[in-house]
Amino acid sequence: MAKILVVDDDTAINELIKVNLELAGYKAVCAFDGNKGYALAKQELPDLIILDVMMPEVDGYTVAKRIRENQTTKDIPIIMLTALNMLQNKAQGFNIGVDDYLVKPFEMEELLMRVKALLKRTNNIPKSVAVKEVLAKGDITLIPETYSVVINGKSAKVTPIEFDIVNLLMQNYGNMVSSAKILNDVWGYAADDAVETIRVHMRHIRTKLDKISDGKKYIETIYGGGYRLIPEGVKEKVK
Image 1: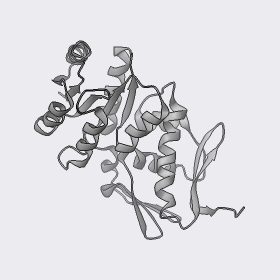
Image 2 (image 1 turned 135 degrees about the horizontal axis):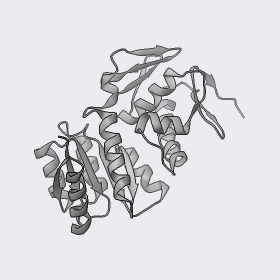
Image 3 (image 1 turned 90 degrees about the vertical axis):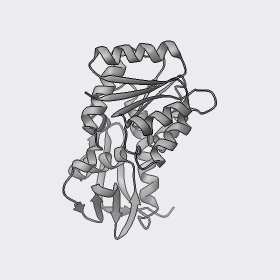
Image 4 (image 1 turned 60 degrees about the vertical axis):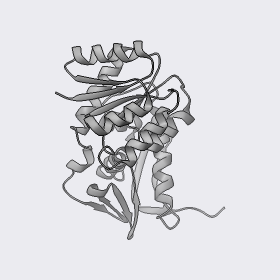
């Protein structure tokens, strides 16, 4: 039975989520503030954390950052709840290492679907760890054990989700991979904000690769379609 930690200062929402999780067959542990949530994350080591953003004293971003910086909790998947449906807020969460985002108000069925998909994707451990081989093509080598992308000997550390995206592109190198396929294969479901979600992650991946790429670009945007990995890279044209 998967254990899920719910951290939300709204007692009504917290209890509602707890009841529905338990009806769906999960064990639920609740915290009503950020400090208690972080303490329980370390104590309980849940399989997944549902974390609200807007909380007094310690907000969800701070809690998520602490979870990712702690060696015992850093790989626990996090679904962040927020009433702020703004791209920059999502970017902040994803940059910390949040796995998924759900905007309030939401349908409980939607939350349960995302919980199920994320637990299935991670299988209670990051999906990338299950990749047994180091993947290599052109200038790029992927190292699953350290969530690293290596380009010509230079290494960039990426998040587990970013690694899974690059890994998917690597498996389909040279061919376009649609945003819908990325969301379905990496997250396990489709969503209305798929395009914006993928754009945020692609921007983060490109920023990290740019630091080790010696001026080459390895991910091409196919406008109106998706993305394509070019393992040998392409030099940017001087304007």
